Image 1 (cartoon, rainbow, N blue to C red):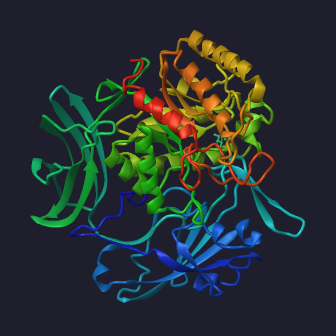
Image 2: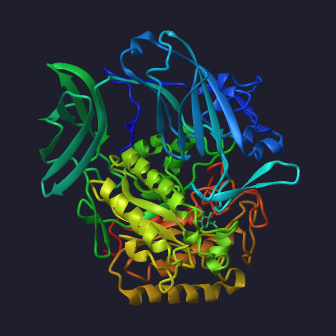
Image 3: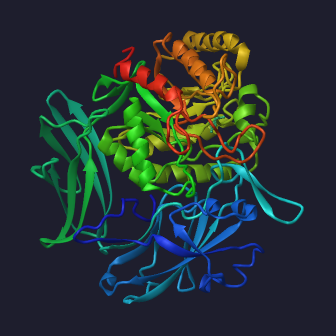
Length: 606
Ligand code: GCB
């Protein structure tokens, strides 16, 4: 079990969550001297930078944008006197990829892994009623012992450089909100919920984990604030007749208010928004509340102008409006868990999420999106001496992701890896442990999967049997047989799908990636690769094939929007496979998708 609570930070009658966002002092550690020179006592310089944000895109100097190493932040916080007697934490939404935290010069804690929250306990170290100095040393170096995988090289002038084994820019820093959090000594530490939906009623099973002691009571209220059920005890089942179910694109959220009391006095209270729904795979069907669902949507990224991967509430709103406009019902959090606000919004809007851990780059290649399709670059990734260390970090991220996201009705599945080298014999024991952990950590036992690249073909992939539904990333007509050869791309694609069909897995298949790079400036008749016309042709080809196989139960196009990557021959200032531009305006293909998705019924092919 994690030693801190992953509950979303809320202000309640017993808890205080103060956002520390704003302009923080900022210093890059060019000469790697920060620790020796005791920057933990206070960082040098006068520069200030917004938190949350990626640090890279504010500056005009390339050396700053490409900086790899220790990135220091500092702020001051008054810890109010009323917090004394409570447990007090600094809660970081994420620090990419690892961080050490100091309070008033003293080391307070650290965390590895760049896309999930962590709490640093400052109860003992805080000066109550006074100003406290918070210093954070974030490090953004990529390694093969942490996810996402990559390496860090040293250039001839001594500078370090990030070499990701994945296709998104290594944005880093404090990219999500930071909170000062005060929680009672005895508190509600965690809650698990599970739903059994039947005709005209539902059972809500709950387990509350308490730190310290107290009596647990619960009250469930509907969207009008009316209490519809109450319960007592840390574990139990709430029965509801005629429940409002949480449905795809038609959400209904109840509020579960949990109180912890001692001798009749409330000592902690926490409210969770829940949606009553169950998720199951049965044969080729993905079932939500027993009804088959066809997934339509996107692989996304957290990525936008200026703030990079920093959470941007305005961009989030725009993205949901565009997804509604185009008729989507789902997305995958490729290739890392997103900011918690995004799941809360998906809960409210009725979108389905395939939640992905940052298990990307487990295929040693600097252009793995290209090499993966050809088999080039495969080097037995899971056979390295460092694999056990990587697995430990990976399992930890799975635990943190599930602890954080398990109560979101929008989250319908866990994706445990993206495009790993699952052709390596040694991938099998690695996958076994990941998939078992995901099963054990989630009382809802949501379906588990991983996204497979082309090299993981029906005959060569050794791990697809672990997946409860199969996710394929395929680029027929782009990396494979693009341009005038597209006619053969369709044949090759159908041949692969026939092989999958012959295996008769009796599982749903979802395309978690397909698409073509497209410059919004390019129109060409007849089409050429990179033109808007060609993007339409590639998607039409893919859709023809999808429509021919009844076991294909979802399509999530790559990508929702153009996004930043490392510079290189294959990327024109980023990946341009967006259906929307990075500024969130439609390319021509958006209208093609809108027409298709608005016409496909939710239970398509069932
Ligand atoms: C993939 C990767 C994704 C890349 C994409 C591409 O297979 O999963 O991260 O961005 O291909 O566009 O090459």
